[in-house]
Image 1 (tube, each protein chain N blue to C red):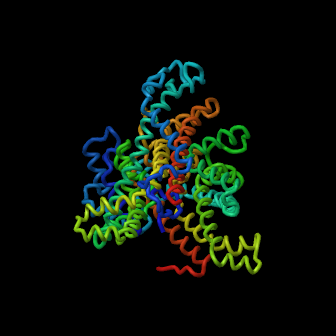
Image 2 (cartoon, helix red, strand yellow):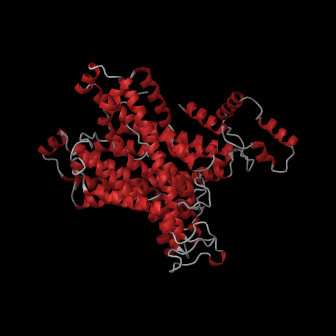
Image 3 (cartoon, rainbow over the protein chains, first blue to last red):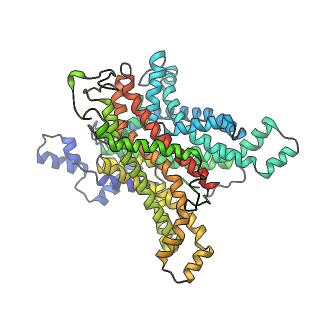
Length: 298
Length: 291
C-alpha cells in the first residue's frame, strides 16, 4: 500500500515542468554548471534508477534535500511537525467537545426545534471555507480582545495553547458538522433497534440508557467517521496554518509548492499519506476495542 | 464502507426509491429544493450578467485610490491596487462557478458511467475498475490535488483534471451497488430475453433507475469543489492572479483586516451563500427521493 503511494507520488512529480538543475544553480549558471548539478543529483539516470535510489534512501529515513534551503527535507519536516500535531490534537478534541453533545441532543430531540437548529448550524458549517472562518475569528475575537496572537507559535506551554486555540477552533467548526450528522444518524438507528426497546422495558432510562446502551453502540461509526475525516483534517491543517501563519507542516507544504521545491513537496506528501494510512489502521483497532463483535482482519 | 468523493459527507448514502422520472415527483419535493434552486439561479444570473452589472473593469488599476472605503462610487471599496472589489466579486462568479460545477460534474459523469459498466458487465471489467478505485481512494484526496496541480501547473484546467481523477470513485461505488441491485430485476431480464443489445439495456432499462444517487450527491460535491477551488486559490496554488477569484480575494484582503474588514469577509459570505443554496438542494433531493 505505502509503496504504491510512494510510486504514484514519484511518478506524478516526474511530469513536473521545469528544470531542477536550473532552479538550484540559478538563472545565470552556465550549461556546464547545470550539467554538474544534474550529475550530482543523478537527474541524468533513467527514471527507474532514480526511483530505486529514492526508495532506498527513503528506507534509511533520507527524504532528499530541499532545492531552496539545501537542508535535508527530513530535518525541515522534523522542525515543523510538532506545531501540526498540536493543531490536530487540539482540533480533534474540540471537534469532539462540540459534536458529541450536539449530535446526542439532535438525535434525542429528533425533528424538534433543537434538532432543526443544530442541523441548520451544520449546513452553515459545511458551506463555510475554513480559511474564511479563520479570518472571521481573527476579526471578531483576536483583534478586539487582543488575547490571541494573529500568527506564529509560542515557546512556553501557555503561549502555545494561546496560539493554537483559534486555529483549532476553526478546524473544529469545519469538521464538526460531519461528525454531528453521522452521530445523529447512528444514534437514531441504534435507538430504533430491538435491544434498546428491551433495555427500556426492563426499566433502563434517561442518562444511563443513552450512555451505556445508545452512545456505546453509536461510538463505533463515530470513530470510523473521524478516521475518514483525517484527510479533511490534514487539508484543514494546510489551510488553517497558512491563515494563522503557524509554522507547521501544512504551511510547509504550501511554501514548498509555491517555491516549486520538488523534494520537499514529495516529502510532505508522503508524510500526509503515511498519517492517513496509520489513522485508518488505528481506527480499526479503536472500533474493535469499543465493540467486541468487531474483529480486526489482518 | 463508502468514502465520499472529497472525504466528506461520511453518511452512508440512503437508497432513493422514488424516481425523478415519475409523474408528480417534482411536486413532492420539499420547499428547500426550490429555495436552493432560487439561490443558485441568482448566482448563475450574476455570473452570466457580470459584464452588464459590474460598474468597473475588474482588472482596472487605480493606484491613486487604493484601499478606499465603500462609497457610492465603489460599493465595496477598492483593493490594494485600487481595483473595484464589487466588480471583482461579480466577475469572480464567472471563474468559481464554472470550475466548481465542472469539477463536480465531470467526475460524476465519469464515475457514474464506470460504476454502471462495472456493475453491469461484472467479471474482469468490474475488477479492473474497482481496483483502480481502491488505489485512488487510499490517498488523502486534497493533498493529492495539491501535488497534481503542482505537477500540471496552476490554472483552471489542472484543477478540474485533478478533481476528476480523484472524485469519480464515490460515484462509481454507489452506482455499481445500485446497478447490482437492479440488474436482475424482472424488467431487465425481460429486456434481455427480448434480445436487446447490452448497451441498450444499460441505457434504457438500467440507467434511469440508478441515476438518482448521482443527482443526490452532485450538489454536495459542487459545494466541495467550489470550496476546494477557493482554498487552493487562497493558498496561492489555484487560479493565478490577477484573475478575480473569491478565495484569492480573501487572501488579498487578510492583511488589511484591521482597517478594511469588508475586503476579506464579503467574498467569504458570497461563497457561503452559494454553498448554502447547493446544500439545500442536496438535502431536499435526498429527503424528497427517500419519501
